[in-house]
Length: 180
Image (cartoon, rainbow, N blue to C red; front, side, top):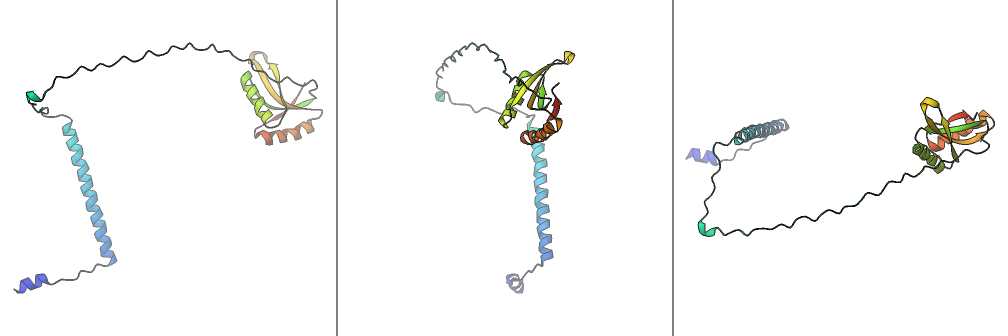
C-alpha cells in the first residue's frame, strides 16, 4: 500500500535553461534521424517498385455490368487558312545630307557600315535636340561607312567645347573631326 501512495505522489521536475536546450537539441536530432531514415527507406522502396515482381491483377467485372460502348466520332480538325506572305518591300533609309558649309571641324557622334544603323544613330542625336547629318565615306577595301556628325566650326577649340556638350546630352563618346 505504501508503494501505491508513492506512485500517486507528484514529484516536481525542474529544468534549468541548459537542460532545456539539451532536450531541444536532442529532440531535433531525433527528428532529423527519423526523417533521414524515412528518406533512405523510401528510396529503397522506389527502387524495388521500379521492377515489379508480378504484374497487378485486374478485378473481374461481372458480365451484366459491361455495356456495349458507343463509337465516338471525332470530327476532323479544320483546315488551316493559307495566307500568302506579303512581299517585303525594303524601304530605302533616308539620311540627312551634310550642310553646304561644313566649316573646318565637326563633331562625330557615331559611324557604321550599315545604313540603317547610321539612321538610328542620327535619330538618337535628333531626339537629344541636336541637328545631325550623315557623310558617306568610301574607304576602298574597308567598304562604305556612314559617319553621323553634328555642327560646323571654324576652329578646333569651339568644336571641342561643343563635343563636351554633345557627350553630356547623348551620354556617349563623340570625337572632333576635320571636315577636309
